[in-house]
Length: 300
Image 1 (spheres, rainbow, N blue to C red):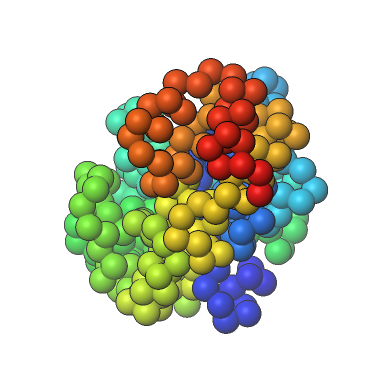
Image 2 (cartoon, rainbow, N blue to C red; image 1 turned 90 degrees about the vertical axis):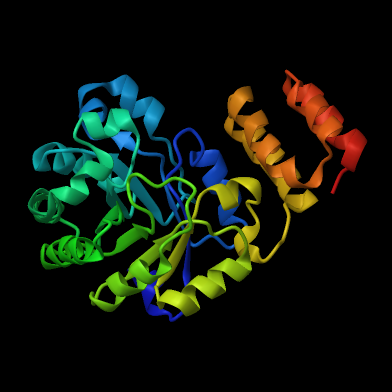
């Protein structure tokens, strides 16, 4: 919560399945990202299996502030999972925004925006079970077509003691339509807790313009950071130093090749030609990738 008290817009790395893992969080923290979320973890699976806990959640001493995002549909499972991760993190976030069909069918994600009492109960239950009063409990939501319903949901969560709310300014049915910044502003104006805006933040100018439009306390980026992990530091494209920082971090932390390569594909997409991308995307080993980078771009 201290992050929200110094008057500057808090810059946040979004929860991204497969991508917002420890190695990528380590990278964006070097480039003025203030807070990071883990990928969404299904709380019931996390509690059921040691293997799931080991594969889904890794961290280290410099990986802070860190928010663990859970998908959950009952208060006790969420609270149990929160108690497990609390010693290694700064907060938990309840996913109320994932629009994927499997999540909605299981009772997770964006279907929770239509269950405000359940969300309120889950927030309150986690708050009651975590001993640390400074431990954050947040929610990440999508909006309703009728923003009054979203305001009601957010006010109920605020009454339950939610620390802040992240608002993705699209409905559960919208994918690439324009973000409804007016709805985010309406929600911000109706609450006294911090609000983080999410959706289409692709450069540092977007950070400023969205703050001006909505008055939010923070901004969260997903695809923008994938394409340019140095976005929050003001770079228009991924700088060469950031590319080599990623190589160093990924090798040091033992990042699997597929993940290592895919992040570089995203980072280089806007600064390479189609024939270059075709060659780079076909590489199949760490040594081939590093040789290619040295040959085409040289060391830092």
